[in-house]
Image 1 (tube, helix red, strand yellow):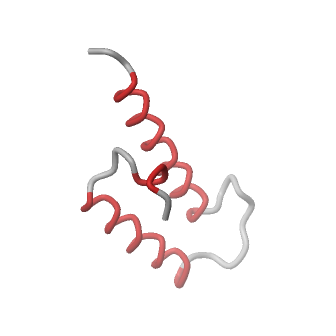
Image 2: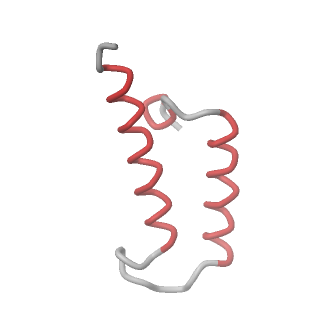
Image 3: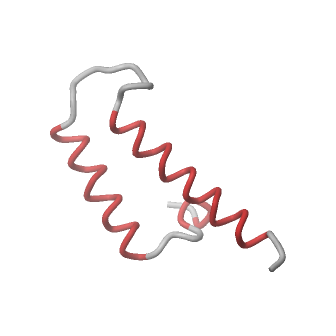
Length: 61
């Protein structure tokens, strides 16, 4: 995983994310569109969290 994908995310969050991701991969629904797919939703939430951390870091206090 590239550093850019994990910046601003705590170690605990990253571990929890991987556990959720694996659970969705093994036990999630077979086929859904991107809008309904819980695996894709999890990825979008993570991307939003990384973007928020980048914005917070770049914004002067």
